[in-house]
Amino acid sequence: MERAIPILPVEDLAIAKKFYVSGLGFHVTFEVSDDGRSGLLGIERGTIQLTLDCPMQGHGRNACVALQVNDADAYYREWHEKVAVLRAPRDEEWGARTFDLLDPSGITIFVMWPVTGT
Image 1 (spheres, rainbow, N blue to C red):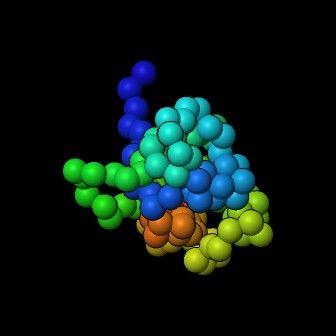
Image 2: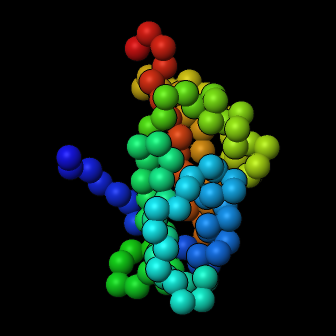
């Protein structure tokens, strides 16, 4: 199986871990850290996998990740009470239902799923 796993730069691994695990329901697949605040953290939720890197050096810092999910409304209902969501789900002209949020390091998380009937 081939796949891409985004590596996201974070400011503090402990803060990011709390956001993604406690806030968004991901679970840890691996963690490499001497102090809990810097290092690498692998997380997944279903088939979505991400790696968080602090400090990320030698790579670009601006990042955005799109998560294609089965039901954007269900994710919104779960997440909006736990973390700050930028906007409620809406149907896009290009045929998807979307919403987005920011992680503690300012990374945009764009959540989308195909609109029924498209």
